[in-house]
Amino acid sequence: MKRFWIFAIGLLGILVICAASINVARAASANSTKHSGKVTGIDTSAKTISITNKAGEQTFTVVTATKIKDGKKNIDLAAIKINAHVTIISADGTTADKITVEPSHKKAAAKPAPAVAPAPAANTSPAPAQ
Image (cartoon, rainbow, N blue to C red; front, side, top):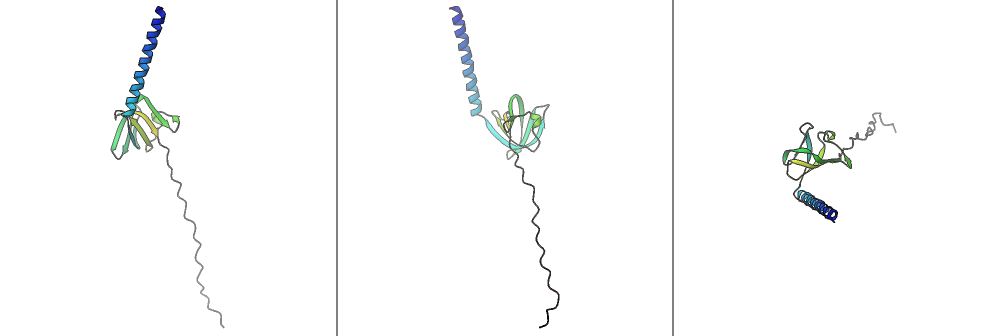
C-alpha cells in the first residue's frame, strides 16, 4: 500500500509540473511579438542577431532553446546570411524564441530587350523613267 501512495504522489507531481509548463508556454506565446526585417549582423560568439526594419535596428539574443528554421529545415545561427529576410518571435523583446528565415524572392535575371529589326533602308535610287 505504501508503494501505491508513493507512486500516486509521484505521478501527481509530474502532472502538476506538466500543467505548469503548458501554462507558461501559453503565456509566453500570448505575449510574444513578431519582428520581421533584413539581417544586418550576426555574432556567433555573443549569440546575437541584428535586424533592421521600420522600427529601426533591433538586436536579439539567441539562446539554446531558440528554434531556428529555414523552411522546414532546422539550422544554426551561423547558417543565416547577412541581408536575409527573417521573422523573429520574442516574448520579452530581446531574446529570440524562434527565428524563421524567409524564402528569398530572387528576381528573375533581367532579360535583354528583344532585338528590333532595322528599319528598311530608304530607297535612294532614282525612280524608273516612264
